[in-house]
Structures are given as structure tokens and as C-alpha cells.
Length: 268
Length: 268
Image 1 (cartoon, one colour):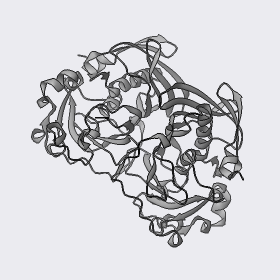
Image 2: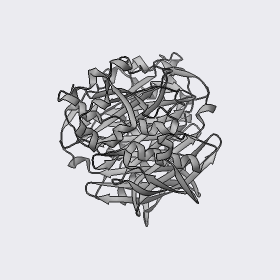
Image 3: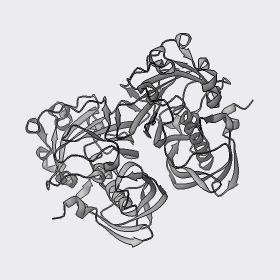
Image 4: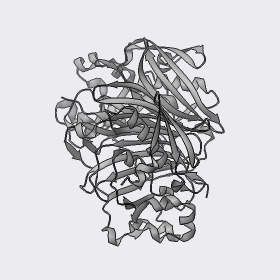
């Protein structure tokens, strides 16, 4: 059976690097559509445009306008393909208006050398069963954020005070994540996972929408099956903006994706 | 008097967002041209394309082929301009071959709110006069890296073991930096500063060229006049690639730029 993710990112090839997509209402959050899901749609189109290079190594996205559920087009243009990688530009549009403009380099993660020398530390989350399920969110929250129904999220109890009006102020949120339908997440799916948690500004006492200006994901390995650990941190809130660093670790203890975004602080 | 930087990034407007540039041989390093300088040329063209938004907030660059000194063209296309920011795509080419493809959002850093809540710590460099001048590099190194003549670099003695065959293995390099002609560095110049130090892989005992796949700079404030502090770190060396995080702090103690790149490990 196809996974929900595969269904929601299914494309219709129209030739010349152009693809039709259907933005699923299941990814709405507040007044918009989750940026990670949209990037997953773009990332799927790029993978189809360069089939010999199935995996994103790096994707950079600039968010130009808010997408809506419904029809969309993704246009891709191969800038260079040769050797082990291909670089592609892509735009996601709706009714002639560009939503996202992206650049990406794709390759085959399985073909990379297997050296690993990571000094970064995994999130050190408590066991899944000791974490706070996203399903405990108030009915009202869940109604305006259908995207929450896509995942099984288990938040670190030490970083979830924002949910009860007591944010830690440290700028740190972390959680276990898997898809609610039990399907494992592939490298393109990591583009979505990197934007699945609430913005780290929730933990700074600033709930609300934090519009992304720019977001770059580096996918570093094919994730092992099972739960992923996802952390969000910020270290520089200034000038009405903040950077947010996301790390995704797989069940084998490997750092499989690093993502940084620059976003506007919620006005809240 | 014009600064050396202004001279080396001077453009000839050809209309329709197209600019002629002259890649100066003074930025050669090994067999190529410094990627930060090239990004500065691209960044200058973008600033000219959207004059009401003079400063880069975010620039993402994908490096497609190695540039050479000599003539170049920068084509810019405004994807969206409205409100406080403009998003622009740009390509730098030579003889019809694309060297760099970039996306950027520009604005006016002086117009941003003046809130600062940075938990990141400045590099903690020893005083300038206790650091190791780049001018002490061997004659042979300086001959293959004319770009070193552009700066006054003073390396943290604790992170410079790689220069004498004793890299620390921590993946950390940091230094004071100013331009050799004494001119202060502006926000576009920070695009170059973020790629001015040797790759952090030098400190991992892997000297040699580390080709950049992707590089994103977030410029967070107009730098105060005077010396800048620049640090490079890596935390995830894996699959033949590494991420490198660069921070630039100004003389007022402000974190003015954050840059991450994904690069290939030197074979050395």
C-alpha cells in the first residue's frame, strides 16, 4: 500500500521538467500549508527530473508567498548533471504565482563513502514512552493544524513548557517523530521532517507563525527505519529575525539531516 | 579612494539585470578563485538590481564549475519585490558556462528592529597582537594563494597547529580579519569574509581544496568598523562530506553573519 506521504507528494509528469501536483489540505497549519511538506513536493519533482540521482544532498528554498491546498505546478531545470551529482533549480507555483524558488544538488547517498566522524551529540531524548504525545494538544490546536495528524510526535517533557504557557526561554524543542501510518521516512521525506516541529520561538514565549525567508537542508545519510529524533535550536534572535538549526538523528544513531533556516519572529 | 574590494567587485551594467564583471587574479587560491570573492561579485550585482534593498539578508549559492580570473557575466532576475524585502535569482557565468547559481533575499539591515537576544558566544580570541599573522605563512603557500594578500589575518594560536603539521583534530579554526587596505567591510563584503579562512578540514589533518557544494550566508547586522572575528567549525564529517559553520562577530561584539556550507572532504 502506498504511504500517505507518497500519495500526498504524487506528481503528474507533463514533460520538459514540468510536473503537476496536488497540495493536500492535510498539511494545513494555521492560515498556510506546512513549508516542509511543500519542499517535499518540490524535492520529489527534482528526484524525478534526475532519476539517476535520487537523493537530495542539499536543498535551499526561498519562500515567496503562502501556498494553499489545491493544484500546483513544479518546474525544474537541470543546471548541471555530471559525475556523481546533479544541480537543479525548481519553482513551485499556483495559478501563475511562485510560492517557492529552490536550488538543489542531488546524488545517491548509498554511493557515498562510509566514513563517519561526528562530534555532534544526539538529542538525548527520554524514551518514547516517557515523552509527551502531540495527540495531547488541545482540540482547538489540532483543528487549526491538521498537519499534526500526519505524525506521531513525542515531545521531550523538558522542552514542552510552551504547550502549557511555561516556555523555557532557552530556544530549544526536541521530539521523537514517525509517520502516523507507520511508513518509514526516505531521504526526500527528511525535507519535511526538518520543518515538522513547531518553530523554536514557541520555547521563547513567542507562539505564532514564524515566516521562513530561507531554509537549507543537508541530507547526510539514508535514515534507518523507525523513530527519528528531531531537535530545533536558535542561538541568534536579533533584528526581528532568528536562525533555527534542526538536526535529525535516525534509530541507528546517525545524524541524517542538518537544516538551518532564517525566519521572522512571530509578532505575538 | 576606492577600496580594493570595491575595485575588484566593480560591475558594468548592461541592462535587463545583466552585469559585466572582471574576476581579479588577486583572489586566486590554488587552482581556483576564492568562492567568497565570487559570491561578493554576485552579491554586488544583486544589490545593484534592487537598489532600495541594499543588503543581503540571506544568500544561497551552488557552485557548479571552477571560475578563472578574467571576464564574467552576472545575470539577475527579481523573483519578488515588495514590502521590506526582495528575492532575486542570480547566475555568474564565464564564456557561457555557469560558475555559480544563487538565490538571495535582500533588504535594509538598518531598518530592522534593534532587539538582540544572542545566546551564542563570541570566539574568545586572544588579543590581535598575540595571534599568528597570516603573513608568516611560507613563501610557497603565499605564492599559490594570492588571496591571502587581501587580508590581515591573525590566527588563534590555539587553532593553528595545522600550519606546522600539528592539527588539533577538533575541526576548529578562528582568526581576526580586516582588509589589508584598512577599509571597513560592508554587508556584501561579509559574503566574502565567510569564506576567507582555510577550510576547517585543515584542522582535521586534511589539507587541500574542499570543493563547496552549497553555501548559505545569513547577514544579521551591518558590521561595526574595525577588526572582525571569524570562526569555522564542523560537527559532522561523514560520507566524504562535511558541513562547515562560520560565524562573523564585529568589533561591537555582535554576531553579524552566520554561514553554513556543505563541502567535499579533501582527498589528501
